[in-house]
Every structure is written in structure tokens, then in C-alpha cells.
Length: 164
Length: 296
Image (cartoon, rainbow over all chains, first blue to last red):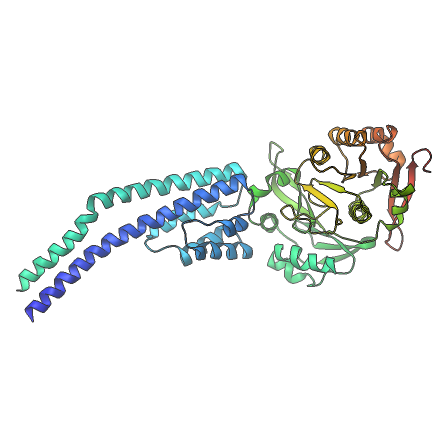
């Protein structure tokens, strides 16, 4: 019985540790996907100068197609700001936190409004913010990624020894 | 039929829901313009000046929203059009704006009025002038003149189509996309089987590019305005290409006051100047305001 409980504790604590590592990795990859697609959208705005809904149709980037489809459908109904917000909350990849979502909503707030120069500034600003956040998280992942897993395993082992 | 389609597909989806709810789902017969002004009821204007009032009177925010809807939520993609207070919707419907320009005068800061003009393809409306445009079995150069809103563009489009069907290589310099109703470079209106269209480019440059690249027999362009435009027409006429163009002027006396354009007539660039007007039955009619010697 004790052996089974110890095994369960070790497994559960290790699982929690690895979940934390996975969440960090997923958050970084979600931010990377937005970074890639927003950069691509910015270039398309500059060189193709098509309406944002049509650009969303043509964009084959790192974000799931469902995200851009939701955005496209939203733009056909109302403002680009609302369409972006709705797509973000409905179809954004797993791993983003509320603070990330807020920051990404900021990009949508002026999407489509103003001239090409204003759009370029908006894209550049969003990209610099996402890049800064991603780099911080990557640094954290490099430093603590292994640590979370090991800590989970060790705390599981410690708990198992305590109940033994 | 086409008007009904344009109304349903090109106009209604772009309008705010509140306005859409007040408008008929089918285009009223002979609809020419939809006029929207801040604080005033919307007006539907049909042929012959018949007006229908719609209760929707937009406020400033509604006008700003309508502008973004017309730009398909992408002001950056219509920067040049917003500067010129004019845009063409997919399908060829034209929208003019008024309101307050920015301090530098380079863009529309606050929209206050819209004039949405239906693109009309009236096949055969240029039929009566075709005997002149093909006099002696060859294509003739002509300038169509009329006051705004009479139907120069509609007549030009139909003349281009008929010349094209008669076997001529026709090229259309369509600066604002209103002649061919271009959607991303593809004509949505029938401009004929042998017609090439260059849109979204200043007409003087478009005329020269078409002349060099597409070996046209007839060049068609709308609304000659600047000295640049008239220079390009002069160049084209000097290369043996027939130019079919239009300009704002009610009659030849008006045209004489537009010296640069009238100079083209004096220099023999046009075989005919045709003055257009609408009859009481709202049918487009023409009269020969000028004919080159021997063609009268």
C-alpha cells in the first residue's frame, strides 16, 4: 500500500513539474507563432496593400488556420479590432496567459486604422514587445526548464520518503 | 438585373446594419445614387432626379464607421483614395466623400458626407453613336462631353465593348477602376472580348504603358483633367492610335474654356466631340458638337 502511494506521489509531483515545463514551452511557441504571423501580415500590408480580411485569407503562417478564418469572418461582420479580439480568445494557440492576451489585443486595437506608416509602427511595436517577452521566457526556460522537472521528481521522492 | 446584383453584393454588405434595415433589399428601379450626410436623412436618387428619403440620419461616429466599412476595415489599403476623397468599390460602384480634411490637406480626417454611385452597365447605350465611331469602316477618335452624372462613363464602357466586338484591340486606362469595374485587376463589367484594362495607375502613365506594351488600336480613358492627361492623349494620337475619352463640359462652349482639352480638338486628336445628355425618357442621347473636316 505504502509503495503504491509513494509511486503515485512521485508520479504526481513529476507530472506537475513537467506540466510547468510544458506550459512554458507552449507559451513560448505561441508567442513565436504570433511573432511570425504579425511580421508576415506587416509585410503583406506594406507590399500588397490589400484589405486586412483578404490578407488573412492569403496568410499561411505559424498560427492555426482556424485563427485567421475566425478573424476573416469577424472582419466581414464588424471592426478589425473586435474581429482580432474574438479570434484571439476563440482560436489562439494554447499556452498564453491573460497578460499575453492583453498585449496581443493591443495590436488589434489599431489594426486597419490609419495609413501604411501607422500600420508599420503598430506592427513594429507589437513585434518588439512580443520579442522581448519571448526572449525573457526563453532565458527562463534555459535556466529553469530542467529545474522544474527535477524539482517535481525530487519533491515526489521526498514526499514518498516522508510517508514511508 | 446587374444593378440588383451590385446592390445586393457590393453595396448592402458594406453599409451599417441600422441603415441596411431601412433600405429595400432590392435596388429601386433606376437607382443612381445613395447620398448619406451627417445629421440628415439618407437619400436614394433614381433616374430623372427622383428622390426617396430614408429615415436613417447618421451621426459623426456612424460616418466614421461607414468609412471604415467602405475601406473594408483597412484604411491603409485605401490611402491614396482617402487622399483623393474618392474610391471605387469592387464591382465598379463609386464613392465620393466630403467632410473635414486633415490640417496638411492630405487625407480625410472626419467624413461627413458620402455619395455612393451605382455602376451601371447599359449594354447598347452607345449604339446610336457607333455609326460615327466606326465611320468609313474604321475606328474614329472621339471625345464625349457632358455635365457630371449624365452617363459618360457608361457610354464609354459600352463604346469600348462594341469597338472590341467589332474586332479592334481596345485598351482601357482605368485609373479609378470605374470603367471596367476592376476587382484586383479583373474587369467585373463587360468591356469586350479584345479589351485589356490597366487599372489603379494615373491615366497619363497608363496610356503610355498601354501604348508601349499592348499594341492597342483604340485607347479608352475617362475624365481627361490635367495637362499630363492631355499630353498623353497627344502622344497616343501621334502614334496612330484612336483615343476615345471623356471630359466634363456641357457643350463646346464650355469645352473651349478648358483650354488644354480643347487644344487636343484643335490639334486634330479627335474626329468627333459628342455632347451627351439625358432625354426626358432618361435615355442617353448625343449630338455632334464638333466633327473633323470631311466627317461632318
